[in-house]
Length: 229
Image (cartoon, rainbow, N blue to C red; front, top):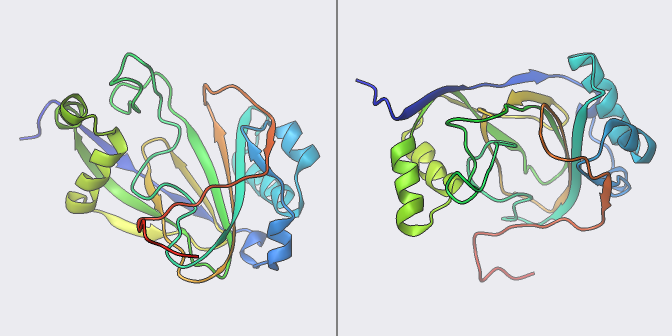
């Protein structure tokens, strides 16, 4: 019998083909501005070739994209590097200080976001993997782990999903556009080769404030503290 404290939800994904599947030269990726919580007008005004192509495709998929937030970044990666924090996670899950000190709350969310995501890869093979199927998580267990040792939500969920989650694992191809929502579990994969990678995500129904910020830095992540350059 299913525990009443458990959350059962569907981790879904819909893939769309786009002209971005034709891989560009690295110089095209390096020339793209990186956005933090940009609105549509700002992204259209400041974006480069890849951003404009993505916006055209997003409008074909969603129609009205007037009230969205756009984040983008590009990386130069070496084997073993991650362009994002490793592990299974969802995007823009609501947070509040009242829930586990500000941890993501997908059990009783006060809003639910939807997303379009695209990665254009030049050689790294660092792509995004989605878990597609029914996912069941124990709210009681996750909240207890946070109370006992401060384990954050995604750290605990990642271990559970990596061990117990059924369902299909789908890796999005370079240039494809992934359509998903706040209940869709996914993770970035480590680079296999040297190269460049560009990421963009459009979000609707978010409660985050528009920042319209262009950033000039992008973090990389490693699982080996002894890694050399």
